[in-house]
Amino acid sequence: MYQIQTPRKNIFRPTALAAACSAVLLGGFAATPTFAGDNITEALTGGKATMDMRVRYEGVTQDNTLDDATALTVRTRLGYKTGDFMNISGFLEMSNVTSLTADEDYNSKMNGNTGYSVIADPTNTILNRAYLDYTGIADTTLRYGQQRIIYDNARFIGNVGWRQTEQTYTAFRVTNKSLSDTTFDYAYLSNRYKITTAPENISAHLLNASYSGLGVGKLTGYAYLLDFPDAAASSSKTLGVRFKGATKGDIKFVYTAEYANQSEYKDGSQGDKAYMRLIGGVGMSGITVSVGYEVLGSDNGAYGFSTPLATLHGQNGWADQFLATPANGLVDTTLKVAGKLAGVKLVGVYHNYTADEGSADYGTELDLLAVKKFGKNYSVGLKYASYTADTWKVDTDKVWLWGGLKF
Image (cartoon, rainbow, N blue to C red; front, side):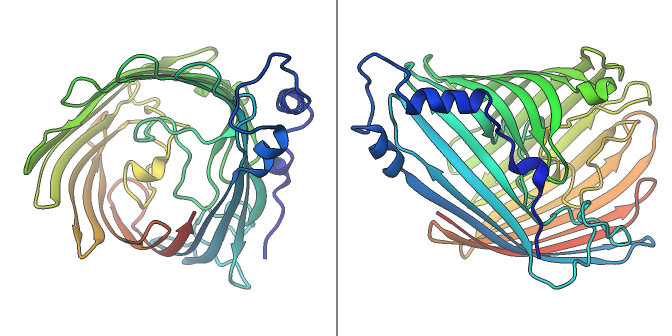
């Protein structure tokens, strides 16, 4: 029913993380410590266990020669966060994805079933997260190890959390909140663990700084320098600024404005491209209606603006037809309606896709979502995406039904 995914299982050999653990466990700090636990045993045994389980059905139908795909899988994550010892704590989490059917009637990108449409949920048992935190500096957290990193709306940096196996990174991360209403976040990435493949060598510097003291929204500036040694041509530098906010009152206006420029970095050779996103909407009586306009630019039709570390599923349609930006770029115009009815979260989004370079019409998409939470720990959801193709890809319909528990 499942297989061990060895490339991600033994990711921490006796290297820097092991050395750091040894220093902590053996009392590498000679000074009298300040910590929550009275001793290391209390810190190790007085922590908190975590569990995150999701059972999901997914069906995919495409207007091509591939067979329709169906998958019924369960994702289970078990974790443990220690207490503090000398301002240091640790977290360890295992993840398992198992198919609940005898046959896998889908292409997971790892099971060899290439005659079916893709449902990128391979069965596996992996080490999902393993890191150490140090909080001995005022208003600062230092983290090292395999971890989840999400910035803003995951447009540029995310964990691909929609899939049963998430994307994680080996990283050293510093988060500082010493200035009022201000967060500085820096991370250096040395590995990326994709949802379906072996670890990818990467050398990336991520800087994200935000200020929320304006009273009308949050202002964020960012710089993402991505060096891919094994795919040098795609290395890039992205510099951008984002502002998102909402007014107060019975009638609320919501707004987002974002701009970024992407250029070549290190041995990159994919030119200069621009990114822009504008969202405006109004909310009242628990219902919000908004219009969005997003442009992923093109380098004269040669390369499209790329976001290789993003959570792409949540960006340009849930049918996942734009996981890679077309060479002529992408303009995504959206109309979104969101609200609640009888405690059920309801979302509907209509997308119209065109090229940024030239006049190609890529098609349209309708996305629908209903999610109901029961208390703090349980949830069920139903989701549907229907992409109607024009000059890009083929007609695609997807449906999901899931239930989850988390504590």
